[in-house]
Image 1 (spheres, rainbow, N blue to C red):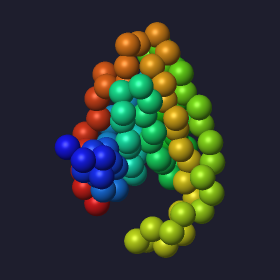
Image 2: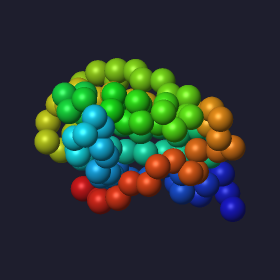
Image 3: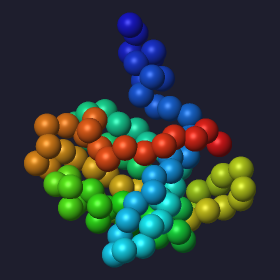
Length: 108
């Protein structure tokens, strides 16, 4: 397998992942616009305005993962300019990031 093929397998097309999470007695839907998971790290991209990045970061930290949150700034998308936030997730107390809490994936 060539290096180029491996890179293509890792960098997926933009997709939307939805997860219903319960926080403080409320049920909410968390929507992720992209995820790249290499096992020793994972990155997820969220719309800043929805505040889903903070919710997901809290859930992952409670589960024992190390999570860093950083603003990406405005990104050009099919729907126009959208301010985005990125989560960088490392295993923390887990062996790898392949066992992140499950989410439903829907292509855009």
